[in-house]
Figure (cartoon, rainbow, N blue to C red):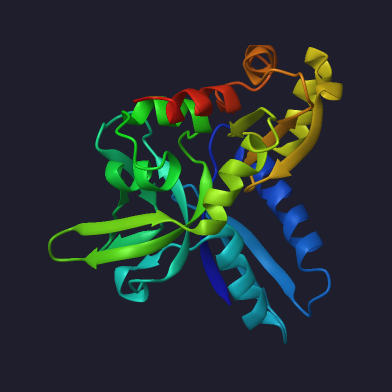
Length: 256
């Protein structure tokens, strides 16, 4: 079977990304009767070829965790899909989300509209998009689970919203009053090296993998994400970094 995943390779050498992806797949699929034939790049997207008696299960697993790039006809309203925030900060009326949807030969991003963002993340309070993005650590390439709410191909209207699982993910650190650093564009090895080199390795209680090159670094109590970001950022090249900060979220909820 062949699957073009939604996982893009950016900010790291292609051979490093492919090697890291192969390591993850061999570990994640180790209990299945599946043989990975090849991993390649097609327009920055990782493409996996595999076969075996459990290939159908593996195919579904990979779509769930790494998404897929396919025709718009293969998507249905109400479907749960993996999506990636795209071009965060470029518009004020919502977030564009890459769900791998192709219209003809061209990719078309869905819209996570501002009114939906407000409803799901800040109890409907009329707050501009940028403060919400800064408080919750929403940056380009961040992968999360979305529901496809509306698909009107002819009108080029594709709308999504977060699933409850994704909403819970945002609040999982906020409720514990922990700060977190979002890193997009680095392998786990790169992140560990950056933490060690900057002297912040012991300030992190968990490195949570969100994708191949996307991670959340959950800080220990009393550790500030804004202090860690510039320290590790200089070791991560052009990786994008964001922060999830409970205090910023509280300020949003207290906005009248």
